Length: 318
Image (cartoon, rainbow, N blue to C red; front, side, top):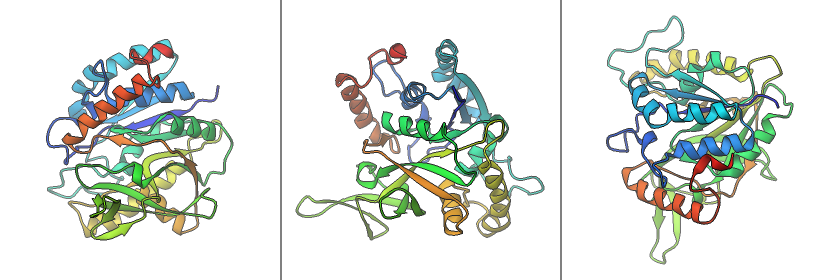
């Protein structure tokens, strides 16, 4: 079977969560975390390598909560586990980190942290998002096929299925070509909130601007192909973009600038350098952005288990 990697970005600080490590919050019947379900679905779909991108300061907690347990589970199923550590000081060679900068550089840097570990087609996800089984099946099926170096796939979610009841969220809002097969553009959009009018009609807006609830959005579930025996070509493009980010964005906003995958990919699309295939999924996203989200996530997993989507002993069917 062709080697395929799932890279899980788990180094985020989670400033809106309000304390604790949100990636490690128990949500399952036996204290499983969201990542447990992501890894289960990925292995079931055919992924055979997992890379965790974490911070060094959470390594001990991470290994205790999931890492050591997952290594045992994956070893029995011949799934490789690897770690990469995202660090504020992991900038491009020759560039200086601004004084007083605290947070790492964003999802683009997270992927680059694992660059030397990736030698096969790979997908990338957020640690604290539940995507549903269909997204992993479609992504794996796409990754094992041959594609041009400048091709990318994105699991496309519908905006109305990705909103939080507890505050604003950030999504990559997409414009899609006719037929909904490819993305024309993706714009990272912050502070998207759910609205309800006097008639009880649900909507969405960002900073007062109404958004189409049926829009496709990126939930940072991307896929990148690779020719056999070579690393994905996108990694070199991402690395070059990181240098340009330091030359431009960091100079303009040294304390808050972030190198984000949707922003980088959106630029490549607008320049006509890449194509992005939409892998449509109707599954309802859920995740932990705010601490108040946790209880609804717990109830969502209880329902999935009751409906037979997962076994109570999560990995027993693999």
